Length: 385
Image (cartoon, rainbow, N blue to C red; front, side, top):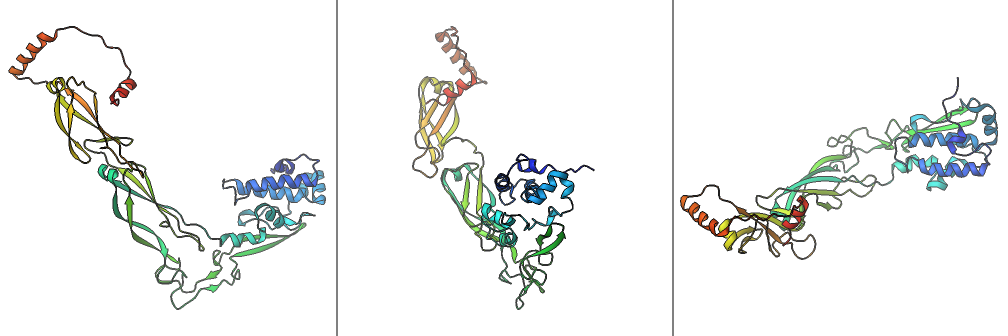
């Protein structure tokens, strides 16, 4: 039956006549690319194992000669690969210093010690997210709010040991405290060592005969914490506020993660936001638009009096300086832009109709064609003060 394995030279990307140095250089480059501690893609581990298998054969003159003559049939049954339990501890590289030395050169640690050491390396805790909804005014002027956030904390009863007070964890008898076990397999190529996580202590290196009644041996408990969140003026929907160290606890002495408060701003009854400007619309009647008037409009700071110039047309923008949104983390504020809409009356009294008819006689009936403008141009005009 033909082997389903790829050609070892193709795996390393070298021609069949390559010398040992070229094979070694090709392996180093690809091993760095596909090592599972560097490459987090789903197929990285499989490719890394395939590289190890190819390199073990092609770096040994005797194995390479047998492979060149008989193909995979010459090396099948040699125990290449380790399955799901971890990486093989290859020690038979002829003149190459062993697999551990290769990893030392690539990543700075030995392959045989890596599993236990990496498992206990300090790791940063996960970040947490809290969604907060605030009003339009709160986004403009800022606020302080107490929030409740759930996360895991060190168990107060056992102080993070996992054992009931008065008892202590014991060193695992299966792995002798290393957190891993080794299975030696004899083959025609020598001894192959397969390193796996200890099934008794699950890699912890110790066992607990009497788990803590509060955390049940997990060393952590879920708690709800109250935190004070300061929201600065000028925030908007999507703004994130970082509370350093308020995320999940780190592992093995690593730092805690962060808490990110993500803001969502409710719509306002009158105002809408355009960057740091506040936009609102007001309606005036035809007499106010034609003759001009003084009107009162709401702002974020209270009511404000503005002048409607005589001859105001629908879409005119009147700016109130400094009445917009405060600039986030800097001085100053945007403006309030009041967009005027001229309301045409639909239910006229008899007297109003008579007066408008008299006015119409003085205005004439001449029609003046207007140039066609696109929607974008009209929007630009709308916000031209």
